[in-house]
Amino acid sequence: MAEDILRLEDIWKIYEFGQTSLAVLKGISFSVDKGSFVAIMGPSGSGKSTLLHMIGALDTPTKGKVYIAGKDISRYSEDELAGIRGKNIGFVFQQFNLFPNLTAQENVILPMVFQKSPEKERVKRARELLFSLGLEDRIHHRPAELSGGEKQRIAIARALANDPEIIVADEPTGNLDSETGKKIMEVLRTLNKEEGKTLILVTHDPNIAKLAEKTIHIKDGKIQ
Image (cartoon, rainbow, N blue to C red):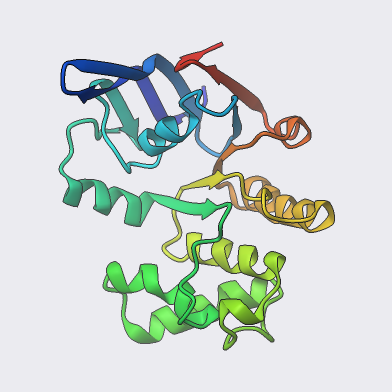
């Protein structure tokens, strides 16, 4: 029996606005097996972003429980959540979210600084990751000097910096042309298939969702 690395149990997220309340997530439950590839799909306003915040330990639910690597994080403090994010989860975003004043190498090193890794190890790890993604000629370039595909590969290297078990990718091909997007998906699938990383990917593209082992459709805060 496969081991689940992520489990959500009856997750609700309710926002209060004075006398009004808005339920964005309404009783979401599912699990993700370790080493699997899961796609999440849904229209704009369906609750995907809020769900991603739960999965990525960026926020806690109003009701329900979130388990990551067997730990119930649903009542963790912000410091405790930051610890989980730093060690267990690597994020890849549609907008790349690279620091414009840092080089490719410095962007990849940054998550390791927060984990207090020794400096020599940080540099060695960053260079290994960038080289493995074909970016050996770009390590000292800043984001403005790079193509969209190069920026996204740097973002993937940064996501892998602390060797997380889970990669959470939010529309990782959304800002790329179709050919570059295919190459980025090849990188992510290799990490999943060959390195055993658990891949959770939000997408609007049914062709990308077809690559996943399981697709979760969300609409109006509920799983369809």
